[in-house]
Picture 1 (cartoon, helix red, strand yellow):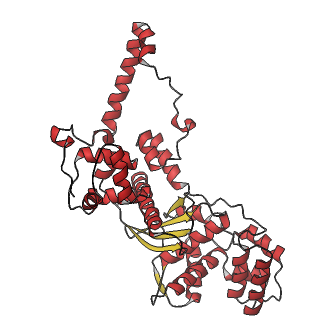
Picture 2: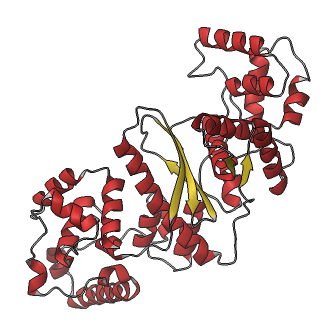
Picture 3: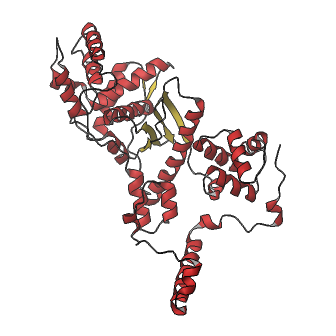
Amino acid sequence: MIGDRMRQARLAAGFTLAEVAERLEKVGQSITTAGLSKYEHNKSVPSAAFLLKLARALEVKSSYFLHEPEVRVEWLAFRKHSTLPARQQARVQATANTIAEGQFWLQTTLYPNEKPAIPATRTVTTLVEAEAAAVDLRAVWKLGNDPIESVTQTTEDRGGIVIGWRNHTAGFDGLSGWLNDEVPVAVMDMSAPPDRRRFSLAHELGHMLLTPKSPDSKFEEKMAHRFAAAFLVPAEVARRELGTRRRHLDFDEIGLLKERHGLSMQAWARRALDVGIVDEAYYRNWCIEFSRRGWRKEEPYTFDGQEEPTRLKQMTLHALAEGMITEERALQLCPSCLTPQHTNKPAEHRYTAVELMKLPREERNRILAEAAAEAAEEYRSNSELTEFEAFGEDDLYDEYPE
């Protein structure tokens, strides 16, 4: 409904009701926060004229409010530090909803017969069961035991939606959920290094595919962590690389394994503990020494993997190349997708009225005729330009709810 779309657009922009009212005032529209709230809760219906001004205030297309989404995202897990305000949480969710909606439309339009290759959710009671689930997922996806080149690409190739959050929101780690109960959706922080991103995505997969038998937030996080580590480095691989029992783990050795498998040095040490290669006392001392060297936030070895979502961009360019969407729609779906070389159009000179009058009549008429034909085609093919009927006098003057 219109109110739901209004709220989603506001949250995605990161505004409160009061801030939206202030922005509307600047475009010549007065309304109280109570009035806006009534609209968002579908207790009153805004006029077309109001929606046009709201679109300007929120910097979205006015047709956004009239579009009835065909998707529903149920968010399951929001990994965050305690410092992440509820307002920022709502912004991340609203933005991810909009992106997931567009990507799902592209997927079902371009590949109508393609279904996500995602195993059924399973209930677990122990961390060992979480580890077994990660091994099973590798088997279902036919990954073998080799290092995974890109967890992001692997997930996208199996029908999952991966969204990169690029606003560098302090305190945000990850978010996951299900779209229409069948498509997994994960949001990851793109400001994190590649090894952190891939672990975060694997962690979100754990939240989506596993359900603890008893509600326990601490166990849920441990469960997802164990799943992620086992998915990136199965126990068999960890023992092959390190041996079945060790008295000492060399920092440079662990750094090289990080470069090979894309699992952080700290996670490798924990992996050694989890599969019984080192004991609790050694692991604790290893962590203390690691911290003493100042490596907790920035490790001395890096992983250069490509953990970047590309599916949305690829599908947007595909649809644009086939004439299924306009450039304007492509920019809405994927703002960073279009560059001059993708449009296949040379830069056109925009004539001013004075310049046109100086041209020979035949040349002037040709340019005007081409512009008119182009505009007519745009209005014919782009429904967003004709969403609203012509406004009557009543549309320009409305009584807004208090």
